[in-house]
Length: 72
Image 1 (cartoon, rainbow, N blue to C red):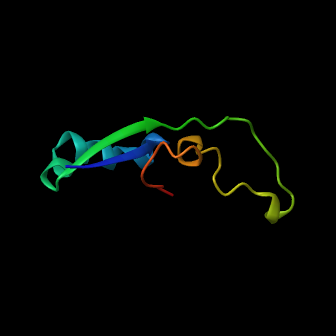
Image 2: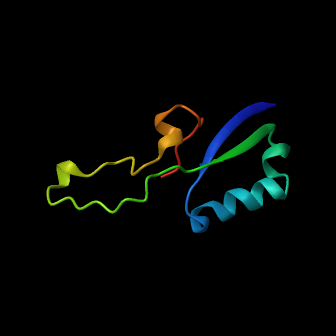
Image 3: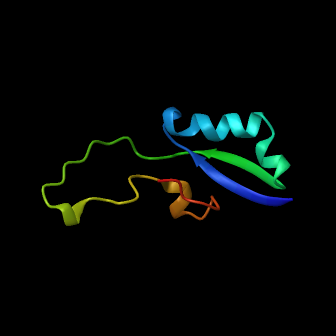
């Protein structure tokens, strides 16, 4: 099986992934799916210049190569 690690962020965005895992859909496709929690720093930041916006928005597991895919 191919090992894939993905991040769990907001529950609204993660429910389809979690349900797919619970229903064995990844396993049927030969994927060993593991999830890690997002570790963003929940600090509110204000950016007045669009160039100052952090495109990763605290997706620490992605930045630290803890996950195989990035879900935007």
